[in-house]
Amino acid sequence: MVKHQPLQVYERQLCLSCLTGIYGCRWKRYQRSHDDTTKWEFLWSLILFFTFSLLLVWFYFWWEAHNDYNEFNWFLYNRSGEWIDGTVPILATTAAGFTYIAFLMILALCHIAVGQQLNLHWLHKIGVSTALLTTAIGFISVNQTWGEEWAVIPISLQATGPFLHLGALVAVTALAWLVAGQVARAEKTRFQVVVLLLYLSVLLGLYMAPLSITSPCIMDHANLTPRPDVIGHQGAPMLAPENTILSFQRALQMNVSGLEADVAISLDGVPFLMRDRTLRRTTDVGKVFPARQLDDASSFNWTDLHSLNAGQWFLKDDPFWTVQSMAQREVMLVGNQSVCSLEQLLRLATLHNHTVVFSLRRPLHGHPCYHSWINDTLEVIRQSGIPQHLVMWTPDWDRGQVRQVAPGLQQTSVEKLPPQVLHQQGISRLLLRYSQASPYDIREFSRSNVSVTLYTVNEPWLFSVLWCSGVSSVSSEAPNILRKVPYPIWLMSPDEYCLIWVAADLISFTVVIGIFVFQKWRLSGMHSYNPEQIMLSAAVRRSSRDLNIMKEKLIFSEVSNGVGSAEDMYMENGFDYYNNEGISH
Image (cartoon, rainbow, N blue to C red):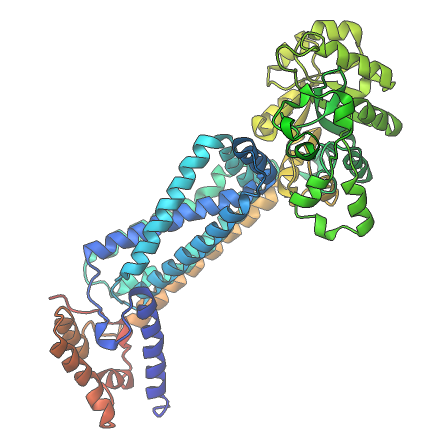
């Protein structure tokens, strides 16, 4: 056993060299110190922790915002005029920055665990400052340009809250080893009390955290409502170009209950499907009508619109990264799509007896249909032969006249109003963004016989939360993904959740007590001084080259003579050098 001790010592020295070298570029033994961390370096440790926390929130935000990536890219397109997937550079830089900062955090905790002085290298300080600055700029930019997306965080916590709580509990419980070591080695009672109280406060807060965690998926299984209907928003735009006949056909293959589209009106009064104000993004207007590519889509007549190709852009831009998985026949079919009229969509829905909901955009002032756009649309609905009860009518203009002409339409509001007001206006449905209706709102509207459809729901976790909330239907760009969710991702009764909560707290408390007792016993027999450490600490504060040489000779002279270093002798006597504290000077 004694023969292997030098090898073990050298292995620990190598590990410690790597630890202090990577964190503070202190590769040599005499550069390390067990002195207390300076106030300046302690401040940098706080900055590192704050940067890590900020990046953690930023990373979580973009992870959960995956539901709205297409919305974000469309927003960027409207500002820049060029279609790019803006989420790729954001996700790449976020992942790289978070990995780097998390690695530094682990190194810092390891420094504390072995009693080494925190001394972050200046290159790392630049890296931490850069990460902090860019993340802060990111927060400000999102808040100013896409502020409504912050609502995804509290909504996502309804799905992830119980699991994040357990993860945080495991992490803080594991930190007990570090905290117990610091408390056991500390000589100042005040320091021991402060560290202990701070840790116990955090631990107690986590033990009580479930009292503030609310999720609609914590419910009795018998109270789960039927699976929400899925409406294909712009068809199935992940599988085919948005707002084309092929896209709606693909949506029908995904067993959707309805189809949703964005409708504009042509110069000659034909309602057609188009999301953008211009035709640049989703057609080849720049090739066919290069001088008119920036004109409003409603300034084209139907003959010109129908002559445009509405599929090649999808193959070129690949907005959902799905083109590469298509067969050659599918690629050819996608590339031959044209602009779709509202009448074509209505006839397709009639054939399959599916609901249709559309957002109708009023043409610009001076357009021939500026005053008749409502009547023109109603006429198309009448001519298509679709049963009126299959059409969800959303425009607020002239609802009284619309009810007289087509009393069977499902009057739908895109504005969140009290149930009493909705009934007075003859409105029986709501079409809202998923962040506009809480589980309480959904239940209240349901009790008042008002159906709620929420958009745009693409992620299984969001679909599951809304399902547990009791929503009647959702609008989705990913019916192909939601089709694979036959049941909420997770569902547990309050009693089951309470049992998990109490059991986790008891296990954590037992482990923490065990760690503190073990650490107290392990460190109780160790001295608080080390002759070698005293000499190194006294010299490390000087920068003289002669002193560095002297310290190297002091450390390695006995090793070269075959006697063993001072540390080796301490190891042989059962003392752990790394757990001893330096004496301040």
